[in-house]
Amino acid sequence: MTRHLLADWMRRRRSGAAEPRVAVEAPPQLRADTGEYRLIYKYLRDRFADRIVLTFAEMEDLLGFSLPESARLEREWWAVAGTAADRTPQSDSWTLAGRTATVNLPAQNVLFERHTPR
Image 1 (cartoon, rainbow, N blue to C red):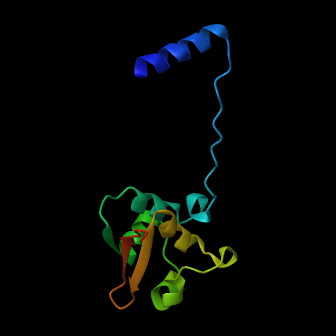
Image 2: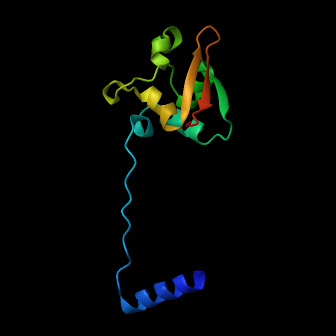
Image 3: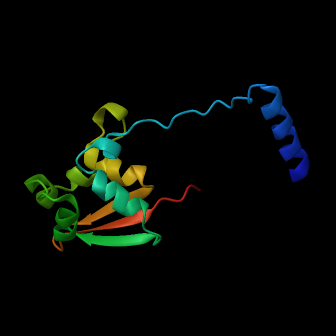
């Protein structure tokens, strides 16, 4: 079968026939991909483990800047908004990586778990 496909491709190349085009839908652009929290996204995306715990200090080391005071004091900063208009760059960083975040404010760490659809 593979030889047949290769032969067809070679015939089309010699005849100058155009290759069939396949429409590929571009993924939606999320702020985490280009925003200030993109390094968290990349870190979480590239980890094999289903559960990752990062301290606030480790996150700041990855980012290169301090987390805002609200991240240390308010659980809402770690929440994922229900509507696209209310999304935040930080929550996009872990949701784009397929993770959920559970913050432990007294311990100053966050558990990122891989989201598995049911």
